[in-house]
Amino acid sequence: MDLVKGLVLRSTGSWYDVRDSRDGHIWQCRLKGKFKALGLKVTNPIAVGDYVRFEAEDETQNFGIIHEISPRENYVVRRSVHKTAHAHLIAANVDQAILIATLVFPRTSLGFIDRFLVAIESFRIPGVLIFNKQDLLNDDMKEFQAELMELYEGLGYTCMATTAVSEEGLENFAALLKGKVSLLSGHSGVGKSTLVNAIAPDLDIKTQEVSTFANKGVHTTTFAEMFELEPGTFIIDSPGIKELGLSDMKAEEIAHSFPEMRELLNQCRFNNCQHINEPGCAVKDSVSDGEIAISRYESYLSMVGDQDNRK
Image (cartoon, helix red, strand yellow):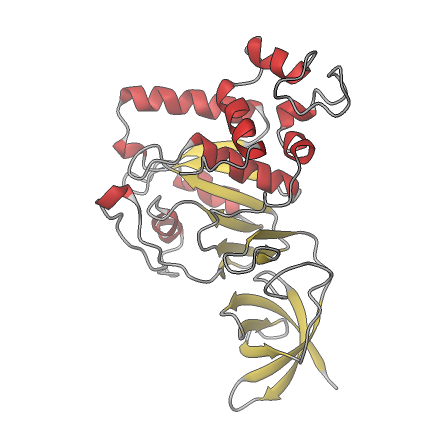
């Protein structure tokens, strides 16, 4: 049997768009029989960004059968909406995960930003924050945004400000993506597609305006999809990542995914300190001293308490 290596560009549940590594041809592939999901409890065994080996089943109809999945460097999951014990694979083999955030229309909460960053830390993937729609900010909001960028850059995250209207930050955005596989996330309506179309107009990714009803955008993406901006530069546009993988994380793991808390490892009086109301807690002391931002500590408490602060 002649198996061909390919890259999964799109998943629609049971069929996959797979790009032939030999000539770039796109095949419509399905899985061969029952497929083990590489030891993961997931609803889908294959994700966008996976490398697979497939057999060309019908060249006239463009059909193929996937026989093997190559080992992954990493992967991103979100909690499955339908199966509580399972997760849904969003993407694999990602170089960086980028959150597009907006402080107005729609507003991205700090809780949502922190949840995203904690999830990405837990997947061992570098996180990037892009604050979009600069043209909608007044002076007070710009000052607040500058403070946020200083906070997150101090924690080791790349931050940048953009707007497609005046092309502010677009060169930096394009440079950030170059030569990498980037997962793009964010609430509907934050301008993900508009930003990408501004630097790669040939893609013509579908966009929709933010509905003024409750300032929530209308979802345009239902399945994750990978686009090639130029040779070697890929973006993965993902459907809403509201349920990013915190479902199985214990308090200790969540704390380890906050870089500022990770630095204080083993400095609390108790080894199993959850940084909530225990005496001799180095994390709480750092919050009191202003070394850990109150907003970050509040996000931590919300995650540990499994409250929803992601609006």
